Length: 395
Image (cartoon, rainbow, N blue to C red; front, side):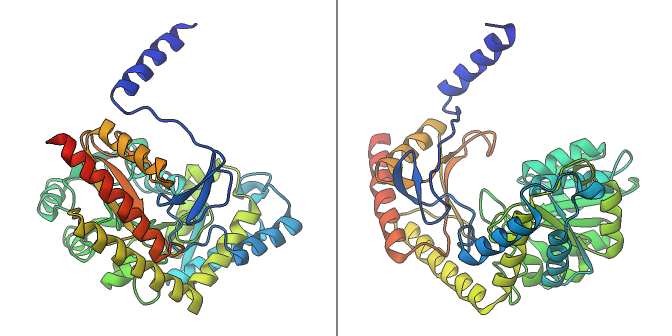
């Protein structure tokens, strides 16, 4: 065994002792409210497929048609020869859906965040982040060479203090998720917009967990807050409510032209497969349709049932999204709770450090339009027993 194996192996042993070791489980089915794991069916409360589109026949037909016409792979990056026609159609639909001048599709939401931030700022600039922003936002800031400043979660006073202290910076960029991916709570977006305008900053928002779910036109939290035209950069993903894969940015034509020329994660990545892009375009159409509205209504009914049921069990949280965390705290106890749910045929993985801070481990429950009332009642019954057993043991 090499020195590398010795050292990494020792680290893995420690992670296991701390309840932080991770493994992969093989899924033998399409995504949905029920999935097959290692040959066994589970009720799935772990997916970000909020509107139940990942296995929708409309998306599959669109993907199949694109596969037949354009083949499997794009062949190169978009700036070489990978910019196939489905990309143009998807970006046109995304811009119209989001009510902005233009859109640009990336290989993933991670790539979109990293590439966009690093293209907009650099040495001499400052990027100001919410403490609970996604890892891709943090990584993009570090790669950019800009100074990184962090304010406590949703703390507007600290945000303004940092803006005041950053007056000498060439550019000031605030970046926040709108729906926070591990807690399910919302950014105070209208207030952040006021602060960015007051202090001459730019604002970039990540609507990954909001696109398709909020406001009259289902565009996201910026629409719900009435501040869409005051946002400088809006990012979203195609892999959550839109059921496909990839990330995108919408904004002014100047912004999109700039990213096309400077975003390294776009320029140096092979383009997404055309079938994936075509499926995403079909998803945008579906989300904007009457059926999309019906799915969203069903989702929010399910979310209310889940939250009310958990509240009755004494589990309170600040979530205002389909992400409903049950914070247990101890990593090993959280793994054990996940295991007990699995024994009952319910799949909810334990979320632990470094995804969340140490001591904040949780079951990240996600509700979708594909769940039934009986599904949610079954989960509530199971988690009620598990939490009661854990409480009795702690005493």
